[in-house]
Length: 637
Image 1 (cartoon, rainbow, N blue to C red):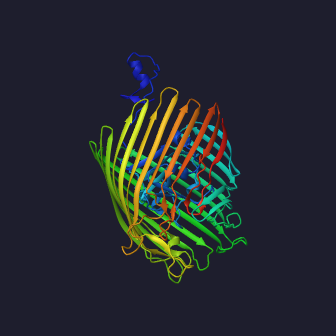
Image 2: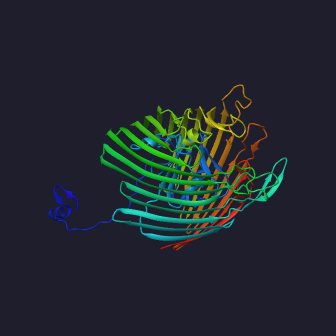
Image 3: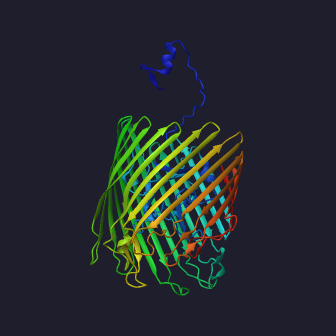
């Protein structure tokens, strides 16, 4: 019972001559038209679950400016590239803490499921919260995955069967009581991945069946939340085939037998607390352990190096941030992060490498009427230690700034931002046997963005549109080139790229009575050019794998217990080699359909991916699966 002028409420009522009573008030929903200052795209709640997708990569492909590199099938590696910055420049976060890989700097998005997520968001540059960690300022683009906070107790079981001998089972238990909430989610999947393909070009017409594209994995994760505290435990164990590129006219006879075993787990926790309206703190901690075995030492292999390598990686991370808001229009944020990584491998002449990665940031935000300003200065320091005759790479320290300016009036928002950032060479870049180069310099990225956005909301209608023009330039790109002969490659700084482009998004929602109609569209136009050597024939030519034009449209129709989703994606042609101007990947269209029905506690879903059975590739000679079907049935109590 809250006190009122020194008395409990009941006592105050009695003194005033009123008897105790309870009055029910109508529900009031408070919304805000204030948009994030950063450039952001997001899929949330019902929209996310309505997509015909199972992994994070499948959802992200609908965002403007995104290229997904997929090596085919459920077992193929899946990485994200945003505005042609490269996969190493994209940070992926779960509940505000980054997923890391000091070995190669990339995240395999195929290991993470959408089933436990509440939202998926993509920020160009980085999110701009009042209180956030230093690591969140250290990427060219950031992907935020927010797990769902349960609001009641439940237990659900799902079974699914799909094309290419794919079977999937999942169990999810949720609880919510006395301010605490959490879940445990377990999933098992097995697929042969033996899909048919047709590879057709000017010189060949090959029909075959994709081999060695199988996968079997177990995923278990749990989370616990209360107020500003959140924790997450994740475990992923898998065995998969690593399919090689198909061989001309021998695709049913030649098999590139490579196998990969993964055993990854991490535990993380985060706590944020606002002491008063002026003071807020944030603490993060995480421990990660990863094991990878890669083997090609099989008699079936003909032209593949025979290896049987094991890698062990550990990572300890902690951060502290403090935000001070002395006035309603001004806030300041300071943060410090430390990450210690170990990499061990049984490669010949490879010694254990340790890396200490420290980051510190000072940031501020100010607002006056509709005008908003955000600025930050990030400091990064890297120091490696290894016992070899050549020693470790020199320590690396850099300051990098960013600044964002925005203005909002009525339903419109305008923004402009600049960010300079770099990525340090990965441990593979520096120390991988016979390839690593300890003298590598960091890759520098400069980003400029100018954008506008409009939002409109009523009880039945909601619509938004945004348009951004951008320029990116990268210096000292880290590439692998054959400097010592065809079979001896080395890492080196070689290259400068210049990219200019435009992203556009339009989305809307209309809810008349029992019906709901949603539309999500995205468009990307960009020219990512090689500006390395004016004397080279490849100068001012497009960067490989970077399409000039791509667009997507998703329509969702819901009526009471039935939902239907149709998604169409178009990607234009992309170069994949400078050796021959004809070396291009053809444009393709991909149409997915998903029909979901819910009756009482049961939900049935039918998905059809690549409805038109169009044959296409993200990487040359790694054909993607054609038309496939998945049927799932779940029951909740």
